Length: 544
Image (cartoon, rainbow, N blue to C red; front, side, top):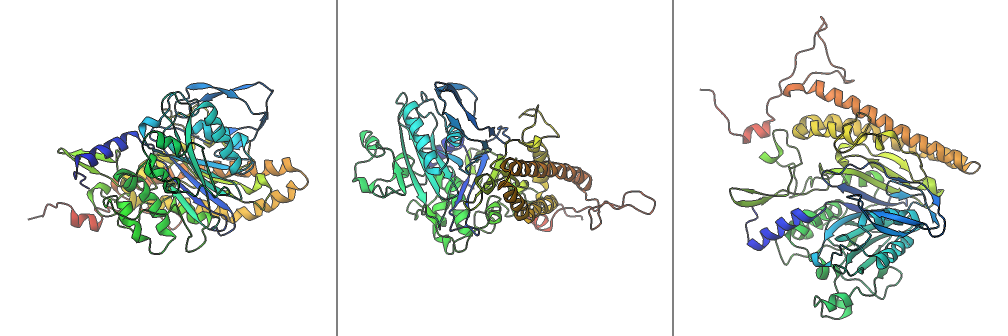
């Protein structure tokens, strides 16, 4: 798609493509879910990152003990803060009280970044998880820390949830050397769904609604001091002041929010012009919507695998960018040049750059260590099976915590690498090979959901008399499923390389076994050639 409309537009796109991190979060209130759970998600999308399943054990700490704050992305120590007397067990992005925190980076005004602050967005997440029993407490911990020690990341949107409440919080520094922040948090109504994807989402907020809106004392006065806002307090708009959406913020980021809302709301095409990013007068999307039906965990998992299918932004439409077998993925960067002209790719929810993906399920009616399940996968959400990780787990499966494996060291014992191995076989031959992956993925997940009620019933029975035994049961179950997933994915990799070797297809029976002739030799291969839609579009050489 050509974007040479104005030099300003090109400059904005190039700067955005270079500076932004790219993640996606979805949020579902407890009255908007099928079973009354609060649900939230996170696609951690960053090329070059190698992240498994994080774990911080519960602990008690002596008075006066200090804690090093290491930058989440670089691991550089930025300073020290006092340790809390008691910290809670954290597995992945959920803790033993079912508090879950995710994020997306939107950047905002570059001059607001404070490089002297101690806390970056990633460190802030995991420190808050170790110190919080509710979402509100997590907000208080996060804001108290940055107001005391400074915040050194760009503008950030956080998803902060517990079994009863879902919140979205946005935060920015106040400039180099300030050690100050501005922030605002809004509670998502119980019957609503929300999303954010690298574009600031909070606009106007009701400063009088102390129950559902929290904010820093300087949230407006700082903008006034900079000359960025001159209206009445009730006219203040967070994102239009600190992170005004440009073309990239709408097309590359808010479009993912639009895709999520569009799945669960009628008539959402009215906001398509906003998502397309071209019309400066387009109607902005609401921060949240009430869905037309209640969502299940499976509904949300499916939304995490979205490529704009069935919409005008679809990346699976027939064009040369998808290759012969029409993959719904495009090479990075989002913005590129051909013969001096600038163009862009779409940026859907599901992307090859995902390091890990989760869907967190938080349920208030179960014992706290049983009610929280982090459905976790170590690659693009579309190309993995989400395995269950209970919030009380203290031992990680080897496949999500593999000694010796890293971003430059492949390991057959590591889920990130085995899943990426399979994904990278499938991407270029997507329409041909993806059905095999999908069948394995869906079969595994259906098995997890089929067992969930019985597994949790037994854990609850044990919990009443032997809590430790109940938690060991769930931990063992989670780790077993993750390791079985890895084994099945390894089997899938072997199957795919044999079946589709050298761009032909080896025939199989209904059970997936490769066919042989009566003499025991391999059955003749099927030479599929070009898919018919692609063959009609490509330049062809006719036989005279």
